[in-house]
Figure 1 (cartoon, one colour):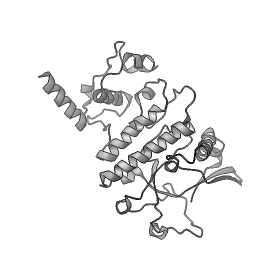
Figure 2 (tube, rainbow, N blue to C red):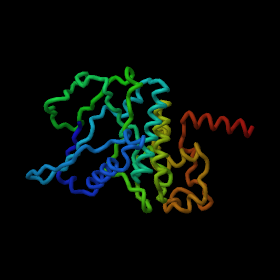
Figure 3 (cartoon, rainbow, N blue to C red):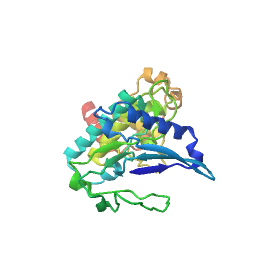
Figure 4 (cartoon, rainbow, N blue to C red):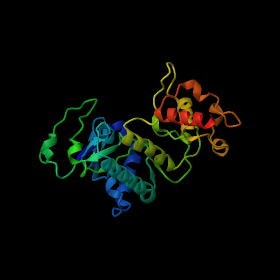
Length: 286
């Protein structure tokens, strides 16, 4: 098993309480659902009193490396399809059975399950006895050769206190900058669809090995909302006026007619997909 020990100050925070509430809902909602086994479940929880306060502890199954590490390997397409299916099942369970929006789906918080066929000694751990690990800024990661067991690995979604319940109106900032949905960037209302937006980034990176939104190629160009919104617009087309009217920050980036205040051509967008799109557009106009 794995145990997460929170510092005393964080243990009393709303994020810690939310994380425990989310894990309890995941555990109890519907264990018979096919997506249940693809979301991290809580085995036990307790607190430890110290001179600094009480430390909350969460006990969960031991998992291996995150999917972001697996993406670096040349894996069969069949394994990638299997991983995508399992991620989808996990999201369906979170959304439909638990009423939870992940809000930060990425390859870093999708972990690979340790297959039963692998001897635990092969990854330098023992099933019995205490394992003493010194506290470090970067805790050690359990890893094993995915290439040799790609047909047996399962993907497990993990989440923290930054997740949200589905009910209610959400307008706060969530998701990482690289995978943030347009409605979140623009301060509009968002729902569980933001997880599907993040999933698109994960799938693209898993299949192609590169990021969907590439870092700026022009010197001095920031990887900010202006850049990402322009990138998305070139890929998917103009934002609708109805969509922009619901977003409180739309005036910061768009004119009243819906045109961006900064031209995408001035940002030096060099993504292969954009180059192909621009060439196709040129040939069509010609």
